[in-house]
Structure formats: C-alpha cells, structure tokens
Amino acid sequence: MRLVTANAGTDFDLGWTGVMHGARLPSGGANVLCVDGCDASGGTICSVGGPPHGAGEGFAAPLPLLAANVPLCLVGRFTATAGGTVGLATGEVHLTLPLEVDVHLTSPTAVCPRCRAQGGTGTNRICDSGAHMGQPCTIDGVIPALGVVAGELQVSHNCPPSPTTRVMTVTLPLSLTTAVAGPLAGGASLPCGSGVGVKDDNCQGSVCGSTCTGDACVGLDAAGRCVDVKGGLSQTCCGGGHSDRPCFPLGFTRTGSGLVLTSLLTDSAWPKSGAMTLAAVYCQSAVGAVVVDAAAGLPGPAAVVLPLSVELMR
Image (cartoon, rainbow, N blue to C red; front, side, top):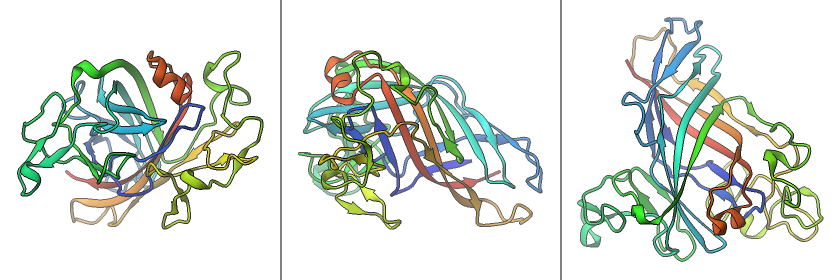
C-alpha cells in the first residue's frame, strides 16, 4: 500500500498557545506499507506491517515550521515496523506508526534545507544547506512559503538539517484512523498533564469555538474551510476579539474519511488506486528546548489531519 500525502487539506496543530496550529504537511511525501492476510472479496480484515526496511527509515520529508519567529525543522523516522489494520470492504483503516522526531532549531531564512536546482535552473538538484549541502537530491515534498522564506520550500529525505542544530529527539507513537480520533482522556480540563498554572488554550478568558479570521483564515479551500497563513487548516479559534488565534476546544476531535477504491476488489486490473484521510489526536511532551516549549505550549495536545492518495500493488 503506497500512501502519498495530498496537495491540500493537511493540518498539524501543536501545543496549547495556538502559535503552532495550522501548519501544512509537505505534499508528495510517500510511504510504502505491507498489507497481508486479505481475501479477494475484501471481507477479511488485512494486517499492516512495514515499511519494508523497518526501523531507521524516514517517515516523511523534513517538516519546516515557522511560528512566532521560532524556526523548527522536524525530521521523523520509524523506530520499528508499523502496524494496523485495513478493511478493504468497509474502508476503515487504523495505523500505528512508531516514530522518533528530531527537533532542529534552525534559522528563519533556512527553516529546513531545500532541494534546489543547481545554479537556479535545470533539472539537476542539490541540497542548498544542512548536513548534505551541495549533494544531489530528489524532491520528496513541497510546502508554501513560510514568513521570510520566499517561494515554495522543496524538501527532501536527501537534505537533512545539520546535526548541530538538533535540540531534542521526541518519541511519538502516532495512532492514525479513518474514523474519529479523540477526544483525549482527561480532556475536560487541561489535557495531557499540562499541569497547574498552564492554560489549555490562549484565549485569554474568551471561549474557544469561534470562526477564524486574520492570519488563521487567509483564504478558503475547495470545501469552504479556513486555510491558515502557514498553509494548513484552521479548525477553530478564540472568541472575544481573538478570532485570529487558533485553539483546542475542550474535548476536541479530528475526523478522517474511509478508504475508497476506484476499482472493485474483484477486478483483475492492478494496481488499484484510491484515497482516504487519516486523523490523530495525541499528547505531545515537552521537547526540552525552552524557546520551543514556550512558543508552542508544551506539554500539550496535538492533532494531525492527513489526506492521502492510495495505491494498492501486488
């Protein structure tokens, strides 16, 4: 099962301050997982394993985040093989991705190294900075401009940031579903063990649940949803004059959509193509860098919405 991140509709929300909500995940990133135990009718629930090379394989291209002038480059990798189930007849998918994420504190003008055309033109591409500066690369993902970084950011597995910029590695056992993810346990007040004196949002006394405006809604996508200035979706914002500030309402959830194939399971044609959206809600621990934890509001809740194109191969 080959999964490719869609060009639109992704969303990554991190922490309780709202500063690092509405980030867009790099489009075009691909992962291949092994699906086994299915039957021709699709009535048997399939098991999922992989990636084929197991621990150490990269999960996605580096993710650039720039919020409140804090530039972060996040690099994820599998710590073990993935697990989960796929119901081809029902479209229900559940995936557990055992990940580690290296958190790099970088520069606002070079949030993550880019895979750029050598000399500014042509098809030969090299990493413009980072650990593999000047080495050949292939684009694995694209996200829009971030703040002072002009133009699209074309990121690549081949172009990791310098190891000297890493401030912490965070363990992240990410559980994704096509169903409803959440709410978090204890979500009625200060989820994720945020602790005494730490807020669950940054609404400054107003209620979280208003329609977003300003930088949290610079435009609408094809489904009429607010798009944040960082390229992701804005789910909900504060009220009381703070509607440009994203937030997590109490007991929040995220909703995926089931796997829909464009050809029947009984067709002889392979591969089979389809689409689905995976969602996750989880608690993110502090990363140990004061500037990052303060800006994002960590420890605290986090959420992912990940629309994917799917290709089934044999």
